[in-house]
Every structure is written in C-alpha cells, then in structure tokens.
Length: 561
Image: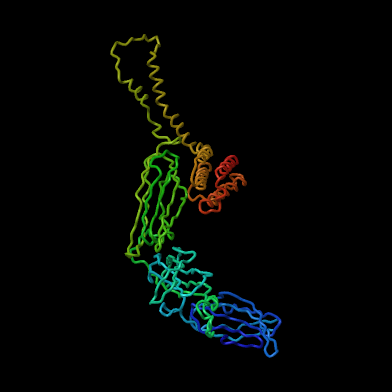
C-alpha cells in the first residue's frame, strides 16, 4: 500500500514507508496519470539525505474501471537513508512535455539499527578491538553480517574512513557463513571484512559505515491462508526484495604520545626489530658490495622511514631497492621490509658501516623503545687504480747501495797518482753517478705516480662500457634490478655523475646536450622500464630481451658522447 501520497495535478510522489531504520530501504515512486509522455524529474535534491540503491525502473500500467481506461507511467527508485532522525524528501519538479508539476515534501523517520537484541532477521555489525588509541596505533575493525533469511549479496561498499591509514587484513570472497546463536536465536554469520586502521592525527575520529546490498527472499504478507501456505509450496509464497544494510558509525578517541619522545623518532608505532648484513666482508677497490637492512615487526610498518644513514665519504652509495612481505595473520598487521644498498668503495683500507637505529613507541606498554643493527666491518683491498706507499722513499735495493759507501774501509796503502796525471778510478765515477741518480729519482717517480692518479678517473671512464657489458653477462633472478644497477654504475664511471638519488629524471636532466637526444631518450626509457619491472607486473613481457636491449643502448650512448 502506498503511504503518504502527494498530489499535484496529474503527478504524484509516494513512498512505501514513513518509518524505517538505518538498515532498511524504501521505495520512492513518481507517477503521472493519463499522459502520453513519460515524466522526467531531477532527484538530486534528495541525495543529501538519501542514497540510491537501485533505479530508476520505468513502468507503464493500464486499467479499466467501469468502462473507463486509465494509464499510469511511473519511475521507481530503491532508496536508503544516510543518517538517523527525521529526513525530508524535498519538493521536486516533474516535467511532462512543456508542463511542469511540483510535488509536496515527504517526511521519513529514520531510527538507529539497534543492538543485537532488538535487531530483526538480518543486520550488519562493526566490531572494534579498542575505542581509544595513540596516533599510529593499530585499531582492528571487523564487519560481520548476520542473517536468518535466504539472501544473495549483490554488492559490498567498503568504507574509506578519513584520518586513518588503512591496511586490509582479510576480505573473504565469497563470504563464508557459519552458524551462531545470539540469546537463544540461531543466525548465519559471515565476516565480510577485517581491516587495520592507523590514526594519523589526534582527536575524535569516525569510522564510517559499511553497506551491503542484498536480494532477500521474504514471505508475502496479507494473504489469507490456503493450501499454498503449506511448507511444501513455500517457494510459491515468497518474493525477492532488494535491501541495503548498513553499520552504525563508530567513534575512536585518538591520544597524543606521552613525554620522552626521542629526537630521532620518525613515527614508528608497534614492536620492531632491525638487522643488517653484507654479501661479503672483503672486496677490492671499485667492486660492489650489497648491504641488506631488514625491518620486521607488528604495527604501522609502512608509515615511517628509516633515519638517514651516514655512509663513509669515499664510498659511492646507490639508491636502495626495497620489498615488503606481509605475514598472513588474522588480527595484527605484521610484515618484513628489506632494503638493498649497492656500495662501491673507491679507496683501500678498513671500513665500518654505521649502526642503523630506529626509535619507536610501544602502545601496549605506553613506553618508548629502540632497535638497531650492529656495525658492519669491511676490508677493502687495493684495486687496479689504487696506489699505496710513499713516492719519496727508497727501495730496499737503494738502501743497500747507499750502505756500501760506509760499510767497508780501505785498509791498504793507496796508489798515489802524480799531480800531472788526472786519472780518476772507475769506482769514484760510479759512486758519484749513483748518488746523483738516487738524489733525483724521487722526482720522476713522484710525477709518474701523480700522473697516474690524476688520470685514474679517465681510465675508469674509458673502461666503464667494458665493465658494464661484463656485468650484464652474469645471470640474475631479477634482470630489471641488475640492469638498473649496472646502468647507474656505468653512468657514474663514464660521466662522473653523483650516485646519490639517481633516477630516470635526474639522468635525463644531467645528460642533456652531452649525448645525442635519441640515445638519451632510449636510455631514459630503459631506466623507466627497469623501474616498471621492479615495482609492478607491467614490464614482464620485456624480461627476456632486456639484457640485450641494455647492451645495445649502452653501446650507442658510449659512442654518441
């Protein structure tokens, strides 16, 4: 039966119920009587208070009463309220041809969905593990659907709450229903959604409602009892109704941190553990080392960054690659982040990679804590372009020759030479020449060593392509990461680019005008392809030909300088 019809000429607006709950829907209908044209109406003024679940459905009916025919054209929507209280469907303008009609307002009373004890045959509940939380602390929210009737779920609208970082824990598809009993009443219940919410600011935050659209089979009411009411014929006495079921909003009070916040705190909240290691403890100058840093823990693990690491100054550091692996736990957001740094030492010696420390807040104890890695020791051996030792000293052979002048004394009587003869013994000439050579030898040696050191970078630049092509011959499980590291190292050695924060954009800007435009464009496209392959599946098709393509591009870049 239509409730509260309003009339304006040949047009009327009706609803099928004036009192509903937040878990219920109602039917809104615009009808035009005895007209050849379909009415048109803009219902956007309603959408502040109501949401369209479905519609509009268009229908034309004809009837004959006492020999007189009547036609009715209508539009029907299934609507749901957006809030509780007394809501009003405002006046709407209905157009039929050039004639316009105005409908009267309709008031609808919307009540809360109620508690479990007062709910009906189906309802949706929000369960939270806490109502008070610190900034960054996990709030676990579970949405459960209870029903005592047959239904089919059409659509689930997951909430996107403002003021929270959101990480999904479980999204069962399709939902699995199990039996449960509430105060002696048996229901079928399914967990539709479980999510970890991390508040990003203090104050009172609202977890927005979740809604489910379902086709519900219900028994038809108002019919007198007949043979068709027998359970055997129950399927003939039911109808399917579309319903929108929503949860009520939930408020969370977010607190600020207690006193004692560390100066290096970057926002980590939970419980974490850091460790680091290298793939080797001993390499030669200009050989690569991989530093691995691993962070494992429970909490807002994707919402903060590590403090800046101060690497040794004479060591090139390339931007790290990172990966995240989430552990499949039911209630806690737990996972592991791994960073890989490629380090290139440029001088020989003993090095120590610094300790990495992370300060974090433990909400369980309401206390501050920290975790850190151990320092990593490295031994760097001399390489091809590394020179060790003083250029001004003497060799062992030179020292032994110098010692021969004073080690032995002449004990026999010298053979005196008459004054008019100028004969000088050979050993005297030899001693003078040797002394002169020892005096001037450090100068050319020093200049030679200095010249080699000055030209070490040029030799490194000239050998950059050969080293890059040799590095590409090695097989890797991740060719995208391998090509990116080789190319960035080639650019560092060939064009003397700073290795910090190299990316396709910075390479493009740094090499404009230095190499040909076409070669530069191909190089930038290659680096972008590597990024796409490392961080997403879009470049999977290029994996097989990536190495050869990289070799060709590097040869073109090298020759176009």
